[in-house]
Image 1 (cartoon, rainbow, N blue to C red):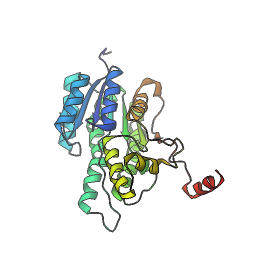
Image 2: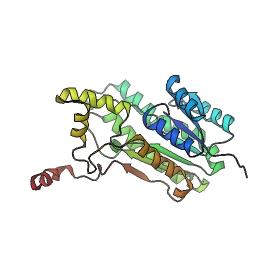
Image 3: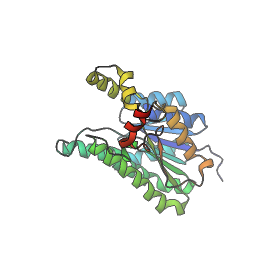
Length: 264
């Protein structure tokens, strides 16, 4: 049996949730490779954690295979895959540009499929694990978010199909669904929303979180902690799970929120 340390590959690992996951896994003793389309952010993270940066658009099959191959060549194997790369894309059925639909689905859903396909033989050899990063938007519909919601819902089912097909090989696959998380991307969205609402960024966050039971956004470290646990031996019998990390957002019955406010 090999005595090498565990190895993880994190897509979209240069910023936000992906960077936090990469840092957490490295702190836990893993060798970590990070991918992304832009060299600067992933190289900075890799340098900080003593990891590997692979510039790759993982929505491309050849790039996904190269990312896995370079990781295995550097560290000697692959135990964990985190499919985190994702983009947004606004629009409803009437006004969504089909090119935007294609780009969002390619990044958010086809990319994880290609990464998992490229990695599965290595993961089976290591009896390893996959975690995909979906969203509460994959569980509940949001306005003007047709492509994003559809892609994130598809990602949850892709993960469960992998769990069913490859559980017999010893590979576990689970999906996390964050709610609002304080990231640079979310801050930009909230700043733009704040302008429309006549408030600042924090005021926009407050508006969006008013009916979330914990009344706050998550930190990237909180998401990373759940991902690290799912990849660990402590979660050895967790397979095919779709887990909200949303402060209680998804269970709220929005149609009855007014009654609680009226009785407060």
